[in-house]
Amino acid sequence: METLNKLGLLAALQPKFVQGENIAQTFQFVSTGNAELGFVALSQVIEGGKLKRGSAWIVPPALHAPIRQDAVVLARGRDNPAALALMKYGLWLRLIISRCAERHRLERHPADA
Image 1 (spheres, rainbow, N blue to C red):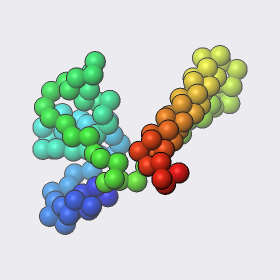
Image 2: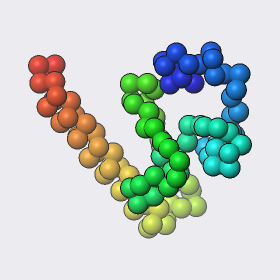
Image 3: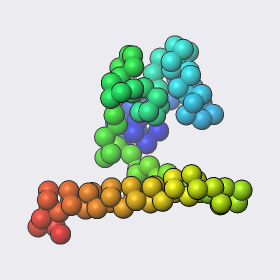
C-alpha cells in the first residue's frame, strides 16, 4: 500500500486488490494467474540469481519503510546446536550488513558524517 501510495497509484488500483493471507498465498495468486500482478518476496521469483519466469521489479527502498525481520529460538530449541548456530549466524550477518551500510553512507556522503 505504501509503495503504491508513494507512486500515486493507490486510489486507481485499490478496487482491483486481492490480498493474500500471507506471502505464500499472494505468490500463489500471482503464479497461477488468479491475480495479474502482486508484491511477493524476491526469494519466490529468483533462483540461482535469475528470474524464474515472468517479470519482476525490485521496489526501491525510498518507496517503503524498512522491512524488519526478527528471529527467535523457542524453548524446545534452546539446546539445539543448529538453532543456536543459525541465530549466531543471523546476528553476525546483521552486524556485517550494518557496518557495510554505514561505510556506504560515509563514502557517499562524507560531509554528512
